[in-house]
Every structure is written in C-alpha cells, then in structure tokens.
Length: 363
Image (cartoon, rainbow, N blue to C red; front, side, top):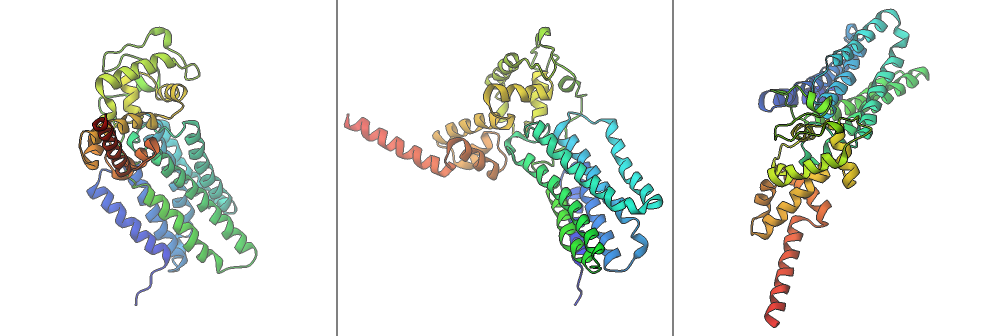
C-alpha cells in the first residue's frame, strides 16, 4: 500500500486545482501563480522532510518567501487598485533577498521568513480595514465574502509564520522529530487554505483594463462614459470628498441605467461610470448611507427581487433578474436586508395578500 506524506497529498491536490483553474476557468494569472507556488512549496517540503532530498533544503525558504509576495500583489491587483503598477514587481525581490540570506547569513533565515509572512499578512488586514472591505474588482453581489476570503488568506500567511516559530522552538528544546509533524499539520494546512481560497469565484475575477487606463478612477474626476461631467470645484482629495455630487450622480445612474442589475458590477466599474476615484466613491456611499458599496447596491437588487417575486416569478428567476449569479450570495443578502429567506418572504407575502383579500371581501 502506497502511503504519501501530508505535504505531498496537499501538493497533488493543489496541482490538480491549478490545472483545473488554468484549463477550465478564467482564473486571474496572479491567483493561478499563487496556487502553483503553494503546490511547489508543498512538493519541496515533502521531498526534503520525507524523501531525504537534502539538496533542496536551501531552496525551501526561497520558494516559501515567494508565496506572501504573490498573495500581496494579487490582493492589490484584484482588490485595491484599478490598474497594474510597475512598482509591484519590486516585491519579487523578496525571494532574491531570501536567496542572499541563504548564502550569506543562514542564521537569519527563520527570522526573515517570519517577518515576510507576518508582514504581508498584516498588510492585507490593514488594507482591508482602511478600505472598509470595498474591493475594486470584486463583484458587489458577493457582499462581504471577498473581503472575508482575503482576510482568511492573510490569517493563513500569519499562521504559516507561527509554524516556523514553533519549529525553531522545538529544535531549540531538542525535539528533533517535531519539525516534520509541524510542517505536516500547520504549514500544509496553511498552504492548502491559501491555494484553495485563491480559487474562490468571489475573488477570482480578472480586472478589466482593456480600453481603460484607470486614470479616471485613481487620479481624479473626469467626464465619464454617460456624459456626466463633475464640476471643476469638486476636484478634491480623498480627505475632502464631494459627497453630494457623487451621490446625486450615482442615484441618477441607478434610476436611469439600473446599474445594479449587472451581475458583474464592481466598485471599479461604478467609479469609472461616475468619473471619480475609487476611494472617493466608496467614502461618499459610506458617509451618506452608513453602508459600504456592496450593501448599498445589493439593497437595490433585493428590492428588485422582491418586486419580481410579487409579480409571480420563482426565486431563481428573480435572483438572476436582479443581478445575483449565485444562490448563496442571493440568500445571504436577501436575509440580511429583509430579515427573511426568499421562501419565508414569499410565504409571508402570500399570507399578507390573503389577509388583505379577506379584509376587502368583508368590507
């Protein structure tokens, strides 16, 4: 009977997911690269720890340091920014620096790995907090799920660093057999979590750059595709947001164009239609409504779904007609806004209609 170590099982699973993602889905390249990096790291851990290929031991920290750098760039590209930044390539110097440490200062390897994993994980958490969970290219129909997924990835990065601390402590206290167990349990679980979550359709959306430089939503207001021209007096920084102008134009767009019916609507698309920076649009909606962008848009979607249900449509038809593309997102947002599931809401609406008819007949 063939027995595979846990890291090798994880590597095979991640490798299968990578092939499936690249061949049969439109997974963004950075997320696919992150998945592949996790698979390669699991293979490296397995062959070093369980198959005795000690020649790859020095490669292990180098390949490991690539994972948090890729996660950070993928997060910025798919969640925060409206366009690529060439300076993001500087993060690929992290593995180069780790290679230098392997050659010149091996005693620093463990400390540097902890700093890299904790640093990037903490940076993702901080950016999520700063942006109020409003991610540029995440579908607004997904609600808070994309931010939750990235938060879990960040925690997995930090957990992986903690496993390195445990390994160092175990070795310092003479538990020479402990590193294999720790790597099998903690590191493999962290890599599997990062790789698996990177395939979630809620974050695996390719940013749209074609025919669009991103300047109009990052650098300042300009005229947008609907012919709305923001007043020149509103060219302000993100600390001085023209809330009334943004909300007025947004409500006009929603009334005239019914943007909320687009299942692929994102904050970046919304900002592009308005001609304001991403951060200003997000800040304006939060200041005016007390809600983030996804909750604001999904409220219109749920209201539209309720009207569809009242007109006799079934739940699935109402869901698709209202800008949702998954049942889980629709049910979650419907419950949050109405306090009932769609089936409960239908039952309650039917009861209310029956009571109203009885009252009318008695009168």
